[in-house]
Length: 135
Image (tube, rainbow, N blue to C red; front, side, top):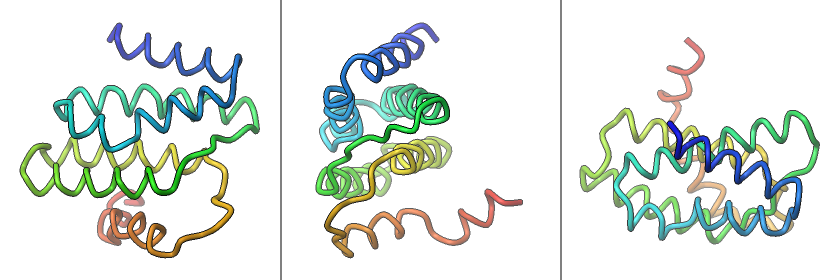
């Protein structure tokens, strides 16, 4: 998909030029506004393109992103609202959650750990989904 390639290339270019702008871009893509204002298929394209690029960047370079935990909390709320309203089929829900997990994997650990946000992140990935991944 050409749009997905463009988004991935843009993400990789930002990583080379300016880490602060990359973090800002990723916070916006994985922020609550995108999931509220776009159809789930478009959000999957954005999430997947950015998350894949970040994973490639992280495997080649040890630099990590600065992700705002409050932003993640808002995104989880928006995801839950979209999922519960039927706005995303199960397959797309799974893809969105995997891409969010990739971004979290490649982010700087939060300086002040707010346990409620950590618990919300963990609740997004119930044990039965984790078991399915290992099989």
